[in-house]
Image (tube, rainbow, N blue to C red):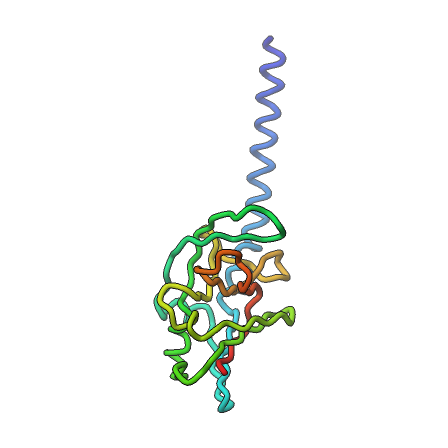
Length: 173
């Protein structure tokens, strides 16, 4: 009995050491991912050729919000997540781009995907967000295995149909 206890304790010690070494080696990757997300640029275009670019800090300064929304993807059941982001309309307000005379907002992703969102949904309170955190963690870029660094989440879209991962820019038309 004593030999098996020593063996189990030995395995636990080896695993703890391996975890510590891995965490130490990975700390630079975590810092790099955080810096890449902070440097991430989201661009707002206007039909009058006005272009305004925001980095993560500037977006956060507009007034971040935490909210829950159900993500439904790939035929799976919906799963609830907590997101952190900024209402897309606040970004337009900061850009001094009037939305009242527009009919849609088009969000374009880094992979070429684009989604057209009805202006009514965008100006609706508590609905269309540019998010950068899911469940308290920064959303990593596609290159780092994530869906970000930005995603557009439409909170009142029951089927997550018009969400846009890898969001890169937006234009109101």
